[in-house]
Length: 114
Image (cartoon, rainbow, N blue to C red; front, top):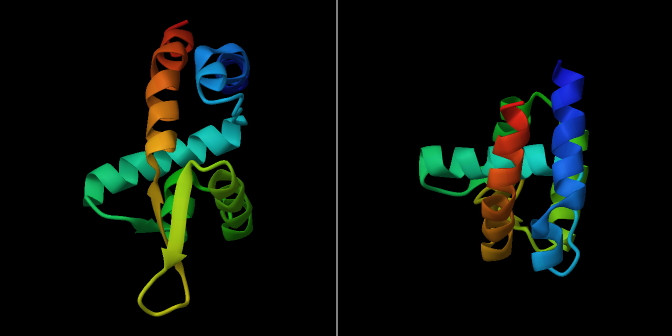
């Protein structure tokens, strides 16, 4: 059942209006999952969060999160900066990332109801 949902979400991300609206930016399932978790964490804390918190939320290892965050940053969907200690990243969703999440919400909700 989880795999069917994942395939449906991947299809919605691949075929939906969000990619067209954002100049062809496409997200993988993992990228969307991490971006959406980042949005939720920021809403919960009302502040930028670190990669460790995102890794814990989505239950992915730190190496995977680091690669996904770098990709999301290259796509202009997140912005990262050093935390005060200089040992970690503070991350927030850019306006472009927030727009993409808004645009993907309805198609993903629709396939989640199936």
